[in-house]
Length: 338
Image (spheres, rainbow, N blue to C red):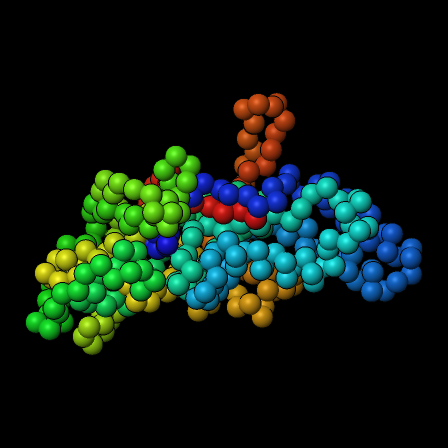
C-alpha cells in the first residue's frame, strides 16, 4: 500500500552489487575491445551499449501504471535495459562480476499510478532522502464505504449514508488536516513488525495491532471536484504520509466513512508526472541518460557529492546525497533497490 502513499523503507537491494563505476567500466571497455577485434559490428554496438548502461549514475523518474507493484515495475525496467544492451551474455558473465544496480525511492501501491523515482548506479544512494521530500497526489475518494485496506482493493467493512454531505462540508474540514498533524497509518502498509511488512502479516490472517498516531506534515489540500459519492483531492505532503488514512479520516469527520477509489502521484521532489516521468516505451538507455542529464540541471544546488570514510575501512568512498529542506527521516521509510 502506498504511504502518501509512500512508505519509506530502508533500501532493499535485488541483485546487490558493488559500485560499477570503476571495475565495471574497465570490464565493459574490455568487452568493447574484444568485440571490435572479433569484427562483428553487432557485437561492438551491444558492447558499447553495455558500457553506456553500466556508466549511468543518478536519479530519474518513470511513470508507474496501475497494476504492477513498484518492485515488479523496477524488475521490468531492469530487464528491458539489460536486453537492450545484450546483457548478460555468456561472455559478459565470464568477465563481469558486478550487476546493474537500480532502485526506487517511495513505494506506490499496485492500484496506484504516477511518478516513481528511480536511482541507477550510485544514484541508489540518493533515494533515501528523496523519500522524505515533498510529494503531490490526486486522490479520488468514495464516501459511504469503508474497506479493510482503506482503498478499493479491500473488503468492505462498513457502509454509511452520505446524502446529507455537501461540498461546503468537505471544504470546511480540510483545514483540520493541513499543517503538522498526527496520523494513524493503515494496517495494510509497508511498515514492519519483526522484519515483516504489516500488509504481509494481515494477508496471512495474523493479528496486527494498530500503530500509534505519528506526526506527519501536509503542506496543502484542496477539493477539486465533488460529485457524490465521489470527491477529488489535490494533496501536497511530506514523506511518511498516507493518503488512504487521510481519506478515511475525512469520511469519519463527516460522520460517514470513505475509502480511496483512485490514487495518482503527480510529483515527487523535483520530478513531475507531466514533465519528467518516462513512459515504458521510453525506457531505453539513451532516454534514461538524457533524463539523468536533465535532472542534474533541474536542481543543481540541491545535489552534493562528498567523500566520506567508511566506519569499517580507511578507504574513502564517494557518496551522493540529495538534500532538501523540510526533510525528516523516518525509520519506516523505504527505498527499494534491485
